[in-house]
Image (tube, rainbow, N blue to C red):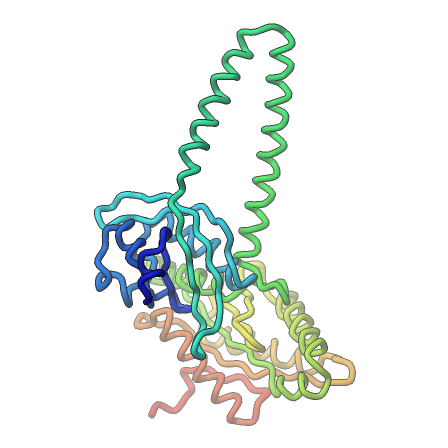
Length: 327
């Protein structure tokens, strides 16, 4: 890192797409009271409180994945001695040396003091208005009306951000991040109360040939139509999400191995028998049912191995990981 960036009047850090710190300038190190070797290679979340970790995953990651940048996000980092540092955070997601990175600039939130001063001044004015004439009371009522309007707008924006953070923009299904959160919750419920569940990974067969033959708009339409079919066939308690590309995942609460296979066969056969117009669609499905030894990674891996077996076995098939020949 050159000296100009290292000593810039603002903090700077770069993280990998998975959140590990790749570089950090001295300004940010001084701001957070860390040595460089204490942060390099560590998750950026290690500089955050639990609350801010949740905020970072709920808003920063989904927003930068959707739009490629984040502008002036009010945030707080935590120093090595556990003091919160309010900042404005700007970030941009880009390719560098064949790798996706997120570059961020951090500015101390000096305007926060001005904001608090404005709030105190407003409170003082409100107290004066309450003690003043009827005209002052009318002004106070108008201020309250403006506040209510802005509060409603803030609630609307927050709801929109929450929806964006958990929804795949193309299909309208839940996204991969939401699925991963629900998978962790399902594992915790299984360990705590013994409620079993199964996981399906569904892949569209020869999807690349659809894009190559009919174009990406038709490919997007296929993804959207299949998403609607999967959602319509699922129970309210099932978690249906787009995993990425042409892959979908479904968490089936309460389904054991036999029930999960039957359910997967219903998805497969219905997809194969549907009238998709001038193109035919089939899916291959991998199934895994939770065991006491499973973690988030292992159950996904087992379902993925089963999917690979369905693909390599001729496609348009359902395979349960328990039926795989162990190597």
